[in-house]
Image (cartoon, rainbow, N blue to C red):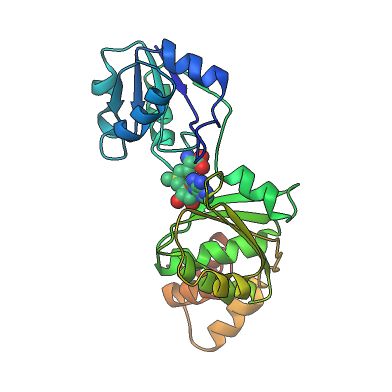
Length: 265
Ligand code: SAM
């Protein structure tokens, strides 16, 4: 049993490898997030292989859906399956079933955005989509800022402004950013400037976006001293734990300090 992850173009139909085309031709079925979208790609290249829908809602039934086949390709809507899409779950399952899993190199949105950003590329972190809201979102942004590496985020047009605003809160308005829009498509654009300028530039965001943030390297606050101050203000247990998180103390350390103080969180 063999599963091959096949990267597909993120905008320009020419961005597909010869090997990807060969595999799409020789497999028994192309499982894909969207049969219409992948169908158009196959049609463009004259590939008659049948398709089968396998998206985030059906990936849980993958074993049953793929049971009739021994040689399967998986393609997501665009880019490399497994990066911020159901591909990662399919790989996990296929390995569990003892399938041979191969990943073809090919298009993905994060790498062109990173290398075109003009920001340091020797160390970077890929965050994908930030959590939509709540404490976890703030914590992730704080953690990114502390890492001291270039950070790559995916974002939808509906949330881009809110994300830039939230990033400004932690990184500051003058922090360098590149926002790549509609890569490899007709309206491709890479905006380079500060976070505040990006927010002004993308007043009515349209299309698909990758946000690349320059490294910040905010030192993590010194947890023990902070915990002492907060304890003096009467915070203990869960309240202390939450206050430490809000101040940007890493979760593990906040938990340890709150436990030390009270014995329960
Ligand atoms: N697996 C894909 C990959 O390898 O890049 C990513 C899938 S994720 C569901 C879709 C997100 O990727 C979009 O919301 C956007 O952030 C980014 N993206 C995909 N195509 C893009 C493009 N042409 N230009 C800019 N960003 C793109």
